[in-house]
Amino acid sequence: MRLSPILELSAALLFILLAFFFRSSNIFFKLPANLSVQVPVNLTSDYGRIIHGAPDAVLRPSSPVDISLLLKSIYSSPLYDEVTVAARGAGHSTHGQALAPGGFVVDMRSLPLSITIVDGDGTSYVDAAGGALWIDVLNETLRHGLSPRSWTDYLYLTVGGTLSVGGISGQTFKQGPQISNVVEMDVVTGKGEIVECSERENSDLFHGVLGGLGQLGIITRARIKLRPAPPMVAWIRVKHHDFEQFTRHGELVVNAGEVDYLEGFIKFGDAPHSHQPEDAFSRFGAERCVKPRQPTAYYLLEMAIYYDDDDVSDAARKRAKVLARVSSMTSVEILEVSYLDFLNRVREEELSLRRVGLWNVPHPWMNLFVPRSQIRSFHDLLLRTMSDSCNNGPILVYPTLAHRWNLNTSIVVPQDEAGEDVFYVVGVLRAAPPTCTVGTSCLDRLMQQNERMIRMATARGSSRGATCGLTTTTTCPGAEWWEEDGGGMGAKQYMPYLEGEEEWREHFGPKWKRFEELKAKFDPLNVLAPGQRIFKRKKLRKASDEAGEL
Image (cartoon, rainbow, N blue to C red; front, side, top):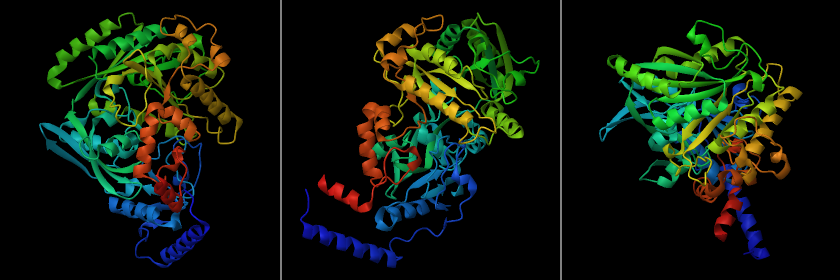
């Protein structure tokens, strides 16, 4: 309903008077004193080093109250109508998701990084600050003989960061992603409210924030399920030369549930010629550039069995049983390591990459969830698309089980009409050569390859694509059907990089309406997480008008 011209003029004058009052008053809308305009250069980009954008200021909060004050000030005052806010932990996003160009960044590592064991109802939990690193959570819980159940491959990430996207690794098929192992959180909403939430209390915020890409609030504390920590791990790698055999064996193992961890890798070239198991277990291949060509491809199924010192014989029986399921392998390598060393295995890879100058380089990563029926099609698409490009970095392909995921959260996984429980995690984690920087043709080429694969994989499924499922034993014939009718595989991006609301609407599918409603409830001005590029920032007056029309 449109107001009369006189009322519109009166409202505009009132708005100007209020703005003048806000500008002259520091009583109600004073920003936190620890908001600094001295912005370190590392806050102008992220691990991806593809998207750049400097914030105007950085908040180093001493408590969640500082974050609350910042967001309340922005939410309540027209002086900050253009300001957005991004929470930043380890900054390990790859497409600018942790950035707030021209806005404010909240340095979550400045919060007190408390990690406390909590007992209740016969189960142990850990209360971890949102800015705490998972490696610190691991070290503290191990002091008590305990451990979180679900992990990421790399542990130098913050608790709040991984819970905002999902948190996945080889334990996910058995324990669910990290977001399925949280029972309670403290969250600062986009309006600056500090809210405790759980399955029973403020459950809409609880479910919405988990996997919610930072859109609804900033996680300042999470209560996470623990389990007894095993001291030792049997770390197993089985080499395959046939993709169908590789996927079939992986699915047998996850459905049997006899291992504690399973991931898979596509490798190219010759296997490492070394008698040292640690060399064979390297996943990044930092020392060389390999072109992904079908004749040189082989596949590694990586598994882990946890065990206690007094459980050695039982672990050996489990290992023999698992290897019997994948008995047609060409080679097996087994390494006995501590639980800590296994979970922290990527740290040594990081240090190696730093030594050769391949850590602080652009990372054109691509992460997807691919339906089981389409994993062969995606494999062939990947090899065709990347055949003339160097590959530095692991390519992960492994099965997980949908029933382990709490789909009340905001995470999006492929929907299989036939009710298939298995879908695949795919990660193409490339590191560009140091000379391949933003604006160069080589980085543009890598990004274009990713865009092509994402477009084809995430397009809605085509009935013609069913002929290229796991039953196919050779490269799919007539694969140009993707180009002809726009059919696709029905995959979903994990940690998506999309261009705007329409693409996000397609990504969320049936979850979009609920997600949009939660955004309007908890961050009505669209202040939070601008780097995700989902919602456009609203001005205070416009948002008030829209609310009045409802």
